[in-house]
Image 1 (cartoon, rainbow, N blue to C red):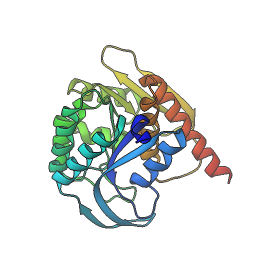
Image 2 (image 1 turned 45 degrees about the vertical axis):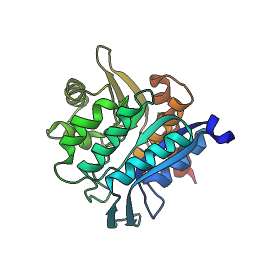
Image 3 (image 1 turned 90 degrees about the horizontal axis):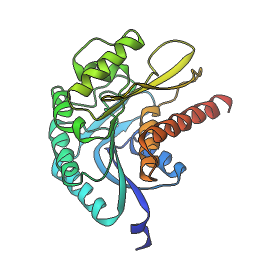
Length: 253
């Protein structure tokens, strides 16, 4: 019973049998921040660090039931959403978010695996943009995901990325963190956009290291800090630092 009173992050996403990404990475990250997790599994995958071999979607009603049970069982102070797979699962998740508007949700719009396999069905991007994005306090696309969400080519520079982010804000997003991991240059800059406010840049050296699951890690760390009642900007700053330190440790080991 004591667990009910501790803040939890409800993780909504797919499994990764390799442990490199998905809910395994989410749980690891949120626990490192010192917050408990509960789960709603949207898909089971068979994958290595190199490729996704099989993908099995959870029934949408089962995803929604898992979310409602977790919200009933625990003091859920934030929700982190990752892989959703289908438009029907998106609709199910959105329905539960509408029932719980007091809980901030962070959406990492997982559209494809690192190896390139689609993790969201064709046509579901429109459903995500229309039905889910406006319900989340933060959306964390990389440059590829941002372009797909607004139906454009990938941004070639920061100005174009900010323009694309503003387009997503105009479509109903509350706040967007444009991740700079796919950009070029000596610095990795993430940009926080909110309507009526100046962009805020979070800058770090670009490290010569590659790691799967960094998108999961960043969104999960942000959600964990939101669960601990940190403001959005501070949660993003701490999340960015968490990922940087993890990459730096991985590089030096």
